[in-house]
Every structure is written in C-alpha cells, then in structure tokens.
Image 1: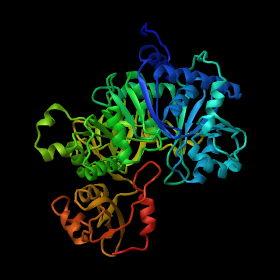
Image 2: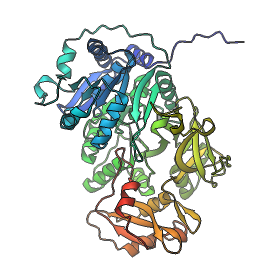
Image 3: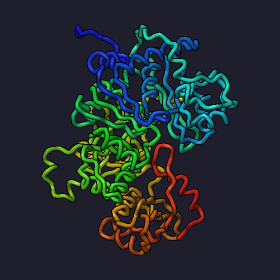
Image 4: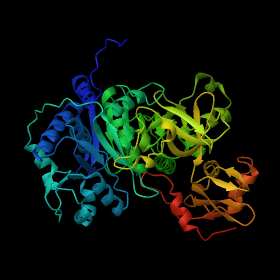
Length: 539
C-alpha cells in the first residue's frame, strides 16, 4: 500500500521561492573587487537571478548545459548559483587555486559552454583560452566602469548584460533528480574527478544541515561562509542560509586575511562562520597580536583538516565555540558535525576536549562504517580503526563521465580514503588518510595525532608529519614545523614537548624547521608535496 501524500519535487528552486516569499528583506552583505561593502536583500538577489536565467536563455544554452564560475564569495556568485541551477543548467564551480593545466582539463572534461569570472582571474583565462575546447565566451563579474581591458574573445560585462534582461522569468518545472551543480575534487592523485549533484541531493543536504545539532541556522543568525563558494557549494550554506532566512556576509577575495575577517565580523555582527583551520589560525593570530576581539562571533564550524587542540583552546579564550565537522566533495559535503551530548558537558576538561576534537557525530541521512582490508565491518568501539566508508542520499554514486571502476563503491558503499574509528555514540575520529598513515615496525602511527600534539607548543605556528624510510623500522615519522614569528625553538624542545602527549614510540627522531608548509587548493596540508620535497631524507 502506498501513502497518499503529495510528491512535489525537491528542487533548489523551492528553496529560492520560499526565501523570496518569507525572507525577501533579509540582508546579504558582500566584499567584492569593485565594492568594499555591497548590500542588498534576498528579494533583490532572486530578482537578479531571474535576469541571469533570461541571460542564459539568450546565450542559447539548453537544459543540462554546464556553465562555469571562477569566482570568490560575493553576491554575484550567489545570483549565479540560483540563476544557473534553477533554470535547468548545471552550475560548475571551479577552484581558481588549482594548477592552470588542471583548470583547462576540468573545463574541457565538463564541456563548459560559458565561463563567468571575477576580474582577478581574467589573466589566467587569457593564458588558457586557446585550450578551452567547448567554451563559447566569457562574462566578467563586474560593472562597466571596472571592466578590464582583455584579450579574451567574445567577452562581456556582467552588469551590462544583466541591465538589458527582463526581471520576469518562468522557472521550469524540473525533475528533482536533475543535475544542479558540478564540483571537481582537487586531484591530488591523477586528474580531478567531477561530482555531479542533483536538486534532490542538495535539498536533502540543506534540510539535514538545518538540524539544531548540526549547523542549525536560524532567522536571527548572521553567517559568514569563509569556506569558498567554489568548493562544495560553500558547504551548503548558500542554500541553508536562504532556507532559514539567515543574514549572509560574504568576504569576497579577503577570506584569508585575519585583520579583514575581524573587521567584517565586528562591523556586521557575524555570530557564525565556517572555514578551514588555516583561516581560524590567521584570525586567532591577528587577534592575539593586535589585542582585538570578536564579541559577536559565538560559533565557528571548522573542517577540511584536523583541528589542533591549541587552536580550539585559543578560540575558547576568545569566547568562540568551535564545532569540528567532516565531509568530502563526494558527500555534498557534510557527514559529521561535532556537538556534545548533554552528559559530555559534565566530563573533566581533558576528556571533554578529546570528544570536541573528534571529527564529529554522524548526522541523520548518512550511513557510515569502518572495515578491514578484507571488507569486514569493524566494531564501533572508538578504538578499532579501519577504512571509512559512507553512503546516503547526498553521497555520490559515481564520478562524472568516468568508468564505474573509478567510483570507489565496494558493495554500494563509498570508500572515503580515510582511516578512522567510530565509538558507540556515533562519534567518528579520523586517524589518517589511507595514503598518509605511517607503518613503523609493522605498527600504524597516526600523523594527525602527532601534528595536533606539536601544534600545542607555544612556538609552533604550523606542523605536519610525513613518513620517511628507516633502516630498522622501515618507516618513521618526520616532524616538519613552521616557527611562530619571533620564536626560535630548538628541535629538542619540541620533541621533548611531545612526551606524554602521544605514545613514546610515535615520537619522531627528528624535527625539521621549514619556511612554510604547502597546502592543496582546498586548504589542506599537501603531504604529496612534502613527500616530494623530503624524498631524499632518511634516518
């Protein structure tokens, strides 16, 4: 017997129409290259999204065609998110921090028809345009007054095009399983892989993140997504903020600058922000050095890499509670979010901190398991680690235009490439990436645990650990450290500091000071680059 309930499709259009009806006056604030503080409302944004849809129709685009964006977090990018997807096209957000050859590969693989770009990336596209096989033209996201001189062919000014478009548009009735957006992985091994999201998966992800124990946005919030809109839909905040009626603050190209972020948070009363650990390290360092504060900021969601305990304690001192989250491009991206259960609030400080630093508690909608090398499921005891696998309605079932063999889906589960433990309460802890875990004398060592312990040293600005060859133990950890400005620690001091914080046999024999630690295009430490840099090192 089937239920007798309506089956309206779950589309991004429904989010937009709801926000336009209920939260039309809610403000969106942006920093952009041509306006240091742009302000308008959801109502004005969605009116312009209709103009975008008319513009795309005038360019001859057909349903399902891919339209690329190469842009920072601002109001124009927000308009494109809705105008492209809701008119039946696919919004392909491209990470401008990728290598140029990766960008040209991505554009060609996606068969993008048009590219909407910020002014900052025009020189990059000028270099690449002859390699872009399917691109018919470019639209620069700026005003006529700020339009740069360029050698791009068939190039147009966004504001000039939009001014000529009617504000009326009849949004098409889309199948909820229609493709809505496309994002490629950073491609640390081989070519980047495309993850093709649907309207349905996006709406379900939006509803899940709205749970109080997840991100839990509300109409009284002012949220700043520092995580880029070119990376996994800004962790879904572009949709969940509209659905909740939360005020949005976009930092534009200034998302990595601690001083600018502090000013923006204080000026606009931001109470929730989201970003990778390096962003919050920059903010915490700026506030410590300047003696400043961010009294309105109450919560921060941190993901993309493990959160060092020292950073979490520094934010605690600023009155900012950090929630660790975990996910992947292939998961839309959220899989866990760390909020404590009531009884955990009464735990002694060290035990409570150990829980807070975990990758988070499994959220409803995602299934998760850890398995051994034989694919056998391992217990949720918080101790037994194995390969982490996931599945659910916003987890990818395969990569765009790639063979099924590349989908990492053993028995219908997506293999994340992470090694993790899960405890009986559903809290997951990443112990390492499969390719980064160190095997010494036949036993596993977690590079993440060593890094987090080292970050607790007062003179350490950033730390990373890689495995290097060892004549007796096959492999041993090597600690790489960026010193805090003005500090001159000795390596013996840092190695001694690790005693009692990790297993003694995990402590590296050597600590090497480096000027900087390389990061991937999404802000994670690039272990691949570090292994290349230290490939000749051996104990």
